[in-house]
Image (cartoon, rainbow, N blue to C red; front, side, top):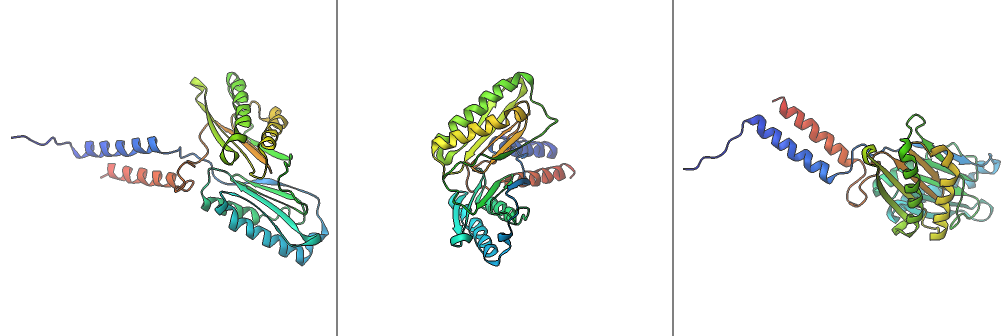
Length: 278
């Protein structure tokens, strides 16, 4: 007669939890992917013409169109509203790793910011997306002004600085030839861990202009971000990111929404801990 192999209850729970967590670690992106936030804006001086009811109506129509259409156009959309002297041109783009739901929410949040409401030309950046609008046609051209955000107390390892620079230069040269001009890459720096990079251009640019835009932004802010471990460069035509952890979402599975997996992970952890208390 054969007998079944029995494990104490605690051992069964330990095996179950180990299996769950092992699967999570193998299949998931890290749960410290970043969250959305308002990064700032760049706009021209206040213009009294923006106070007219016609301009306000056109701007509202433009923003609503961007919110509605960008998420179903893979995160990028251009449009115009109004006619003649009150016509407004708009462009928006979400990060390439976002779900349509998160993209729509981000653009909606941007349109609720009123810091540039009295300017005819404005770019408003959030962590996950940006909105650009102007009283002149802005499609297909590279706008060079931008902004950089970084942690001023977290410096890169001295021996990694050169490798990181070469890594970001490679990002800039590779991105224009990628689908949707969006690209992520990982740099292994041995004992110092890994560095994660991402670059993106707006899809109304040519491949050549995309490369020039990224090169320009990198050269412009190099003295600021060169020895920082975590930084972003945001423009209205191209952007670049460099972090010491995987900040982007698993965009290779479109059905997944950014951040949802982390909530599942937290739930499983809570359940697992409660089982140990039984």
